[in-house]
Image 1 (cartoon, rainbow over the protein chains, first blue to last red):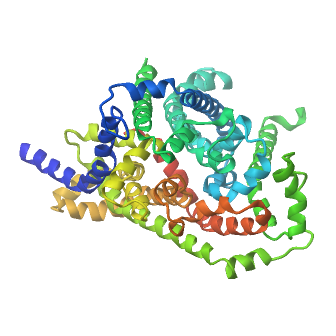
Image 2: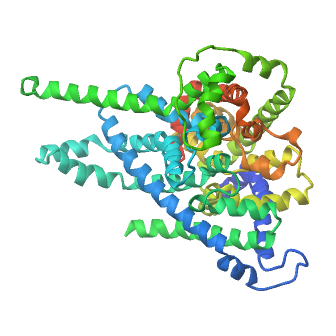
Image 3: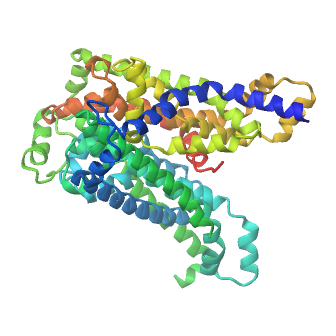
Length: 258
Length: 290
């Protein structure tokens, strides 16, 4: 038995080794280097303790960017999750919705660079509202597909049993279907959050490196620090952002299970 | 309404929902109609419509779905007088193909390892892969830059290709496909004396195709559209993909920009039309927890 376990481990590593090496070389080891650099100055490489972190946290642009990014992500997540669920519930009662789904998914296939000129026409204001509209335009189909998969996974036996027990439509929805969709809600929130960070492509193309105050995002800040070679601040901000993301990912499911 | 009865009302409701969703969906695809008509519109029409947007910033005054004098002059210019367009088009083709090939070569065995072997450390490594998949580009930008400059790959296509090849997202999607293979099948193959390599080739590559196809479709749509990575790591303009070139076309050449955008959209539209089922499957796979 033990021999078999050892053999399994060998195969596991054998299949994984090329991927693991690449991940180590291109992500994990350099990330260690970033952590190290976050304690050094960029020019002389002197150790400066937490100075970089202090500089980042007191930086006006960083504060604005964090505020905007959180503000936009929350708005985008709430809207896309809610609207997506409503749309999926309506659509789940229909048959043959492939064509409708393709209309909503198609924006996902349109390259950002190809619609940039159309963006200029629609979003001449380039504000928070138009950014939210662009997000909903691109990711509503994505969210609907995820919700539809969640709804399809609800066991019919469960809902029918509730109907037999005398629950009406609303009660079945509130007390049977919604609790079943909790797992989907979790993944949809996580994926919507990630997508809300990806919308930067559209913002950048439509409004450039220095957009209006209300849509200046963390991504703009990283980009501008990168261009001006302020790697010490960037390293500290990278560590802070990665830490915040990791914390949210670990904390969120713990909260969920309660 | 009363006469319709329960069944009739259900039907009416379904027709209504279908109608509303179709109208909304068509509206979502309107930008493509704009691109198509814009690409065959003459300069005069384009100027009349676009001037208020780009110069006066008052919003656009109107648009026509059928141009007054349709013209193919922009396409002619694109095909005959814009050699740089082809260089950049080939760049994005090369980048996308190499990235996807690399992701398959690296990601398929990795996903197989996670799906089949329940060994110690698997859960931890998988969690690491999930976290890495969730990190946005800006967070990994500096570390990628540091490793690429150490390997002196900056300003070559490899600077864009290699970090993308080792991205962990496709591993996760391919894993979703492998998970659907019944374990009993693998056990049976072992009892019949098949080696692990052979089981991977016949069962994994044979039955886990939906995960791989999903990863390819999602990957194509993402990398065809790649922007941040080449912008950060490629200085030489002749190495750029098309996505960095299109936004630089001035609005005065809007017709040309529309035509070029449409050419860029075509391959993505083709992949979407062919692979919509895999795209949906891939979206669902990316929501599966390990």
